[in-house]
Length: 309
Image 1 (cartoon, rainbow, N blue to C red):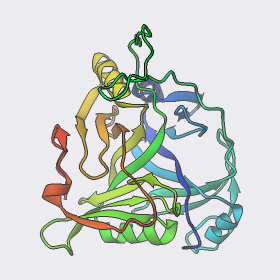
Image 2: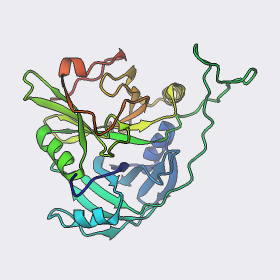
Image 3: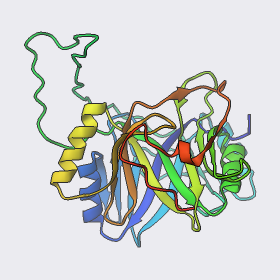
Image 4: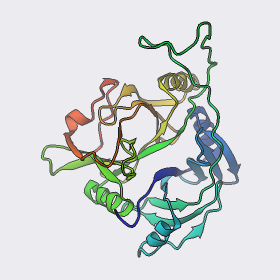
């Protein structure tokens, strides 16, 4: 186990030139604004994390992400790296302390500890009367009014990079992420994308918390947010469609990870994904290799946009 072993993905940080437009988008997408100060909009999901998405005022850019670690000892170990900041307080909702790193493509990777936990936002879940079980009592009608998806949490983010192997090595060796699936084109030596998950031992975690794929330039592909269930995806789909927002791809079911997904674009072209029903794995799962023509096909639904290799 490396000296740094992250325990969860906390938030992502982006810049946008119009914070009013940015806030309107993320609220239509299903995030809850917690603070909107001069120059920054903080948003959360329904879980206990005080912030999972941050928009800062500025030219459109993906700034980076932040991960949680389980102790200040891990932060102290991280701070000894030549490329790391000292441990410093976080003057943002939830507080805590952090060490700042940057990956080889220049994206920020903050390591945080001691962030305040908030009460979860109560969600009225929909018991399903399926062919196998009747979970909704007789006469208990389901009548949910139109509205956005109810996002629970940030689950993963996906970047593009000119050097997949270099980025894969950095995230696995520096943060302790575990390899789940690698995708190749032609020869198995030609890795064009990689999926990586959290290192939480025997605990089952999402199929991936970080993915990157080959591209001429480094950038953001999309951010993946878990919603409550299948129904919640469709509520969000039609709410955003009625609002005239830009649909990207979906609804479909991924092959790798198995998530039911639906993707939208913010006003500056960054991808935002609703997903539910992921595969979960623990440390015993061995990384797998897949050819790109098989890996990047949906099990059903619209084709996934081709990776810009």
